[in-house]
Each structure stands twice: as C-alpha cells, then as structure tokens.
Length: 318
Image (cartoon, rainbow, N blue to C red; front, top):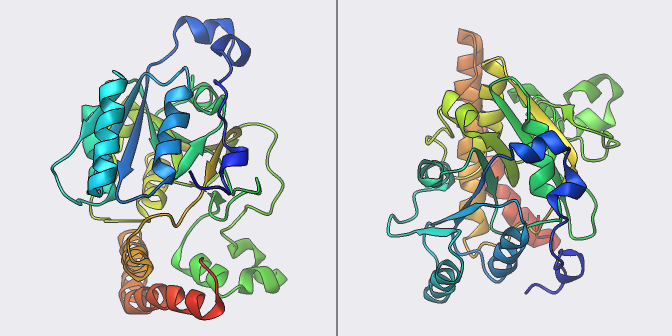
C-alpha cells in the first residue's frame, strides 16, 4: 500500500447507520451500488477496495476492468471470489471511463449508484452521508463528496464553479485570481471555506459522486463521447440543464491520490484536452460560440499535452 496514504485511510469499520441517519431513513435505506472503473491503477487499488467493502452501507461493488495487468487481474478475481457483493466485469478492453461507468451502472442493482475512482479511499460514513443528501431531492440530482489530498487539504477540482470556455481560460491563466475584476471567473473553489452542510454548486468531482438510479437514467448516464476526463463536468452541466441540482456534501469525505495510473501522463492529458474541447463545443449556444469553440479546440488540446512536459521540467507530478 502506498505509504503516504496509509496513515489517513480508514482501516476501522465504518460507523453504524444508527449513528449517522435518522430513524425514518433507516426504515427505507436505499441499496447502494459502488461502480469502479479500473485501468492499471497500481497498488492503491487494493486499499481502495478494502475501504469500499468496509462500509456497512455498500450492498454491491461493480468492478469494471478496462485492462488490468496480469497481477492486478488475479487480485481482482480473488476479491470477487471472497466477497459475494463484488461483481467483476472483464473482457471488454479499454473502453474509456464513460462507457465503462455506464456498463457498470447497467449491471448494478442498487437504488443509488456511487461512482468512485480506484485510487480513492472512502472515509467512514461517506456512503451514508451521500445517500442522506440525495433523500427527498427532486429529480435529477447528483451529489459529490469532499475530495481530500493525503494531507487532508481539499483537492483541486473537488468543487468548481461554472466551467465555460471563458472561465476555463481565465482560471488556467491565473487571471481570475490575480485580477479582482475577473475573480467571478475562477472555477476552482477548494481554497474557499467549505460549507457546513449540503450546498448546491455548479460542478463536483468525478472521483466520488452519487446519483439515484432514476436520476442517472433520466439524463441517460455519462456521455460516452468522452474517453477519459471531463465526463463528470458534462454530467453536472446536463443535470442542471434538465432542471436538477448538483450538490456538495462536505461531511462525505474521500481521500484521493490521483496520478496513480501507469498510463502515460501525456496520453492522459491529451484525452483531457480532447474532452474539454468537446465539452465547450457541445455547450456552445450560438453560432459565434460554436465558431470560437472550434477555433480554440486545437489550442486547448495542445495546452493540455504541454502540461505534463512542463511538470517534468519543473520536477512536479501535477
């Protein structure tokens, strides 16, 4: 297990539901299916699975294996054999996150789908808090947890503002933070004080998000036109477009390592750039916006690809 994560990952059993939820909620507790798309995650995967299966409110774990190594595949088979809650889907190849997540959702039998990254560690009570946040909300609704770094600071991208072409450019260039007049365009909110309770925000992180089955079906799941990254931003946008609400639950905590995949960083960032370019084209509402989105598409992709090169030059990992 990754040494830097071990001290803050919850090894003890999660609190009992009686400690977390009102009596009426317990009488009608929805069944929860965790959906995890896996692709060469590395050693973090084993501990992530341990944390999921330690949660008393997890009724089912759907593992969608998009192409593990021989060793990882053997471990996943072992997990499925040892715990009847685990369903392992294999043999479909690397179909990307969005298609993989939809595949897992179609196989899931729970009332609530919790999509979780394979290098994210659920903290005690996280599942119950997400489920409670969804209770009684209008359709469609999506809720995300508080995504933390290993030092328990809130992770960049854990909660975000409205992501448009202009706000993304302002945020990426740091003008939104450096020029007061542009502050409204800042999309990253992790340095702002966290709300005390459930709050509506424009965009949450795909590292840990939950939806009721009927809500997921109402917006037709993840858009499979995205291969890797930005599908979570798109999902939040479509929920709001459908008259629904995107929620942030600060009490539902998950520690996310990030950058654990053995895939090439340049390849990962390329897919992120392609996804962003597609997202901006998709939400363009006028001819001028469509033209601008198409003109900026190669710039966005090139900028994304250059980033990991600059990280290496500067000795950074992200």
